[in-house]
Image 1 (cartoon, rainbow, N blue to C red):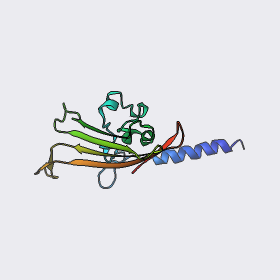
Image 2: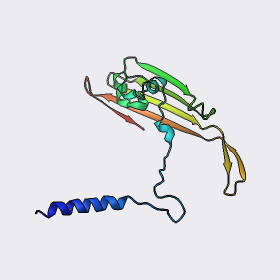
Image 3: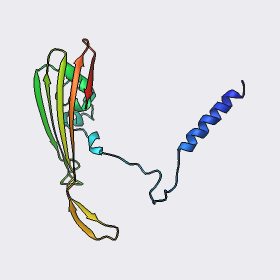
Image 4: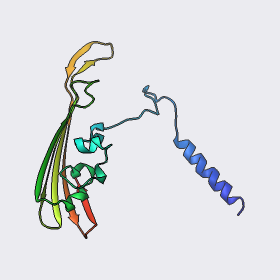
Length: 164
């Protein structure tokens, strides 16, 4: 039994260290490259939460809760509301990049609230080149996101939310 714990520790260490690969793949890409998909989904869409250090989860419920925490929609006071925002994102570095956001909620009854939001991220103008530096023209990429949320209140201080 006294050899069991060092053996388990050695086994766990070896399996963890094998998972950390380094080097270059056959196609030339780096094995440690960090890939991201739709990073605009992590940008704070509303000005109030962004100005408070992205503290949207800790704020009172409003129409922007569809982004931060859809379960907060169950505790909104008014029957319906809409919110719209526009952010010129990193405008001193990229003057033509922006994020537009609109969100809406409607209380169905005392326990259920439905919400929806749409994000549009314009990435400005991007010059495109092929492998031998021949210009392929200017691209204007953008990304969209559309969400629908449902929140249900189960008690005075408990609710659940689902976003699709």
